[in-house]
Length: 382
Image: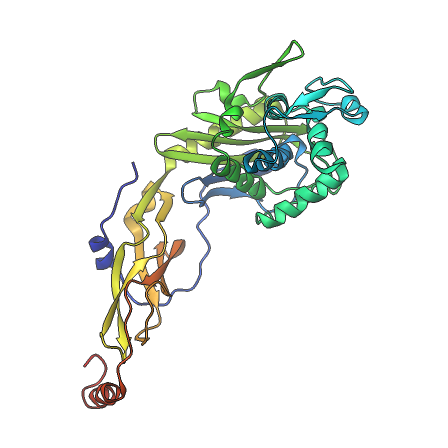
C-alpha cells in the first residue's frame, strides 16, 4: 500500500517560496548495459537512467510499436481478433525469428498478436504492417507519426520488425514510455506478454523474455538482439503495489541481458518506494486574495500526487506550495493558481498543479476603496 499523508500534515510543511526547477537526483547504480532506464509505473518517475535519450538500434524491441498499432485497431473495433490478414511472399521469405506463416494463407489477428509478442515473428510483423497500411514502408511512416503523437521524441522507425537499418532508432526512454502505454491502454491484451509459449502450425516456441522464468514478478514485455544493437530487453515487473518498467540495451550476451535486468530490477524494488501524498481534490492550503469578497481561497490538488524516491531520502522530503500571492480577485474555481513542489536535498522530485477550490468574487467599488485605504493605513494583511 502507498502510505497516505494527511493534508493537515502537508499544510504544516507548506511555504510560498518560488523554487527553481532542479534535475531529479541520479541514483547510484552501476550496470554493464550501455543504455538503461527504470521507471515507476504509478508516478511515471525515472528511478535510474543511463544514456536514456540517445537514439539507438532497437532490434525486436521496436515490435512494441508494431503491436501498439495493431491493438489500437482492435480496441477501436476496426479489427476483430477473428479477422484475418494475408501472408505475402515478402512476409513468408523474411529471415530471423519467425512465426512460420505460409505464403498465401490468411492468419487470424489473435494468432498474429501472439506470433509477434511471444515468438517475435518477423514474418508476422510484416503481415500486420501490410494488412494495416498496404506496405511495410507505409506502416513504418505511420508508426513514426504515432510515436510523435505519444511524445516519443527520439524514435524513427523504418520497418515493422526492428531489422537493422541505419535510420531505425529508439531511445530506451521512449521504449519505456511505450511499454507503459501498452500496459495502461490495453489491459485486456497485456497478459499475452506473460505467456511463456505459443504453438502455431504445430511448432511450439518459448517466450524469449528471460525474466519470465526468474522469481522477480516479471509479466512482460520484449527482447531484442542484433549484432549492431547487442542484447536488449524491455520488461515490467510487479512486487506488492509497485510496478516497475525497465529497459536495458547494448549488452554482450543473452545471459548478461538476463542477469543485468534481474539485478537492476531487484535493486530498484529494494531501494525505492512510491508515496501517495495526496489525491485530486484534496485541499492543501489557503492563499490570500487581493480585493476579493473573501480574503482567502482554499487551494486543492489538481491531480493525484505520487512521489517515488529512495527510502533513505524520505526523511529529507520537503513539500512547498508555490504561487504568486495575493491572488487578485475575481478567482474562478478550478483555475490553476500555483503548484505543489516536492524536493529532497534541494532536488525536485515531483510537482502537481494547485487549483482554486472556490469562487471568490471581486469587491464592489466601495469595498475596493475601503480595502485600498486599509492597506495604506494598516499595511498588508489588514
